[in-house]
Length: 305
Image 1 (cartoon, rainbow, N blue to C red):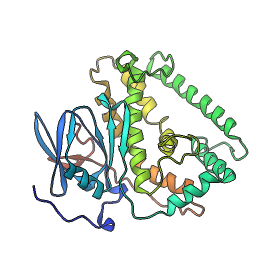
Image 2: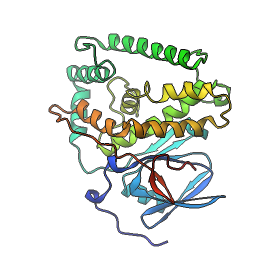
Image 3: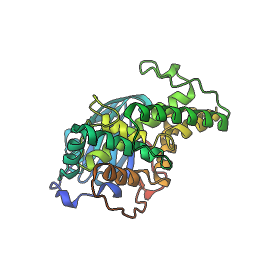
């Protein structure tokens, strides 16, 4: 395979122009010019690297150094996950060419007064009709806990699915019930997307405001903003359909549909800028979120290897 010159940073596709994520397992990943190639027993598929936001690598994947070089140059995030995409093992962060938001993030996270202000803004996104400007972190977390429990109850009643609580053993995935399995698979995808957006904007995944002390604290902060409308409803819907054999694959497909239809990627870009900016100017964001199909190009549902 022949190589190409490294693209200039300004020539790369912007984060809003990219598809959501591609999940692969039991395959070999190589490079062919500006595309990554995925080879398995069914054949070889080519995907333009500049059109990928996050690449999820499942068990049995073998990726070449040249493929990683291309992925890094294209600003793609790599997430190593477990079977069905339910465990978040590690991540590779792409480079960025600016540090404006990173400097803002560092300033806010290191100042106690500014820190709580950002946390309140995060909860303001969850409670748009409530005044959270005076609440302490403990009060914010308590209110969020009540909200999440209420959402679980509502979804349980809507889909007539029993809910026994969040109970996930990473060492024994198959022992969990359908709702918990789907939640784990969906949240893993949501973490990957949040991580890709955070890195593309030049922020640090580890400098969180609600979650602290973890290298992906800010990833969890951002992903939590969307779980109530993305992964929780999907998990109960899937549990209501007992004939689904591959819970992980079906969850990922549904998450991708919601990410596109709800313009979640665009909203993440918007929300992070709002959270970390003193004088954020509102913009009109149109949906530019697509999934890649090797034959038909950009399409709504894309492909899942």
